[in-house]
Image 1: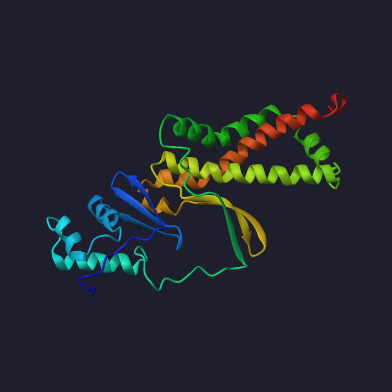
Image 2: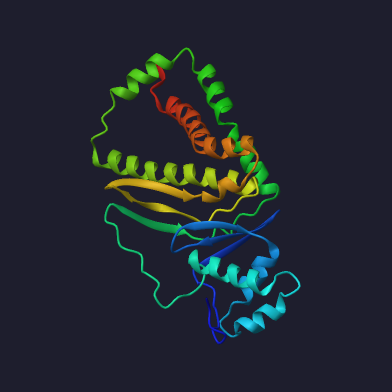
Length: 247
């Protein structure tokens, strides 16, 4: 139970995203995501540490009884959405180190651009199929030439690592673009180490709030589909770099 003079304040680690049914709340410290209604969102926005519980309740007594309002504050507190004097700090985990490149993904909104990008990304299997059809008579030579190349030169290794970085970022960005185009929210994207293995990641935990299963499948498939595009383009570029007398 709370004292009458308590002035609740929402956690400063929260990010809010509006959707069709209300708002998604993301706690960037605990990595938890919640869905709330518009009235619940307004309550959290008013928890700025300047109002006592009685004053807050008077703002929303048309929607809640006093008991319901207090239970809601208890729920917010239990989910670490309110600032508390005994909040625990995140422990450093050497086996899982994540370095965010972007935390808010504000540079892309759902609209015409995201729709066009989504169509391009999902065309990966068709682009790769067309490329393989064009190269169908030269695939054996391409594989043989590729496997016999020297990949242990320093310039090749540096180029290889650079390509991995670019493809990794574009792979995760593809998930993010489809997520945004489906009406979801992307809260974070970056690189890191997972049990000492380099990884690229994108935070699309809000995917569970997308009801359309077909859209969820598109989001999961987006990364692989984008790599099919890169593979198709790469094969065509590789073909042009071969000696003319190879074929």
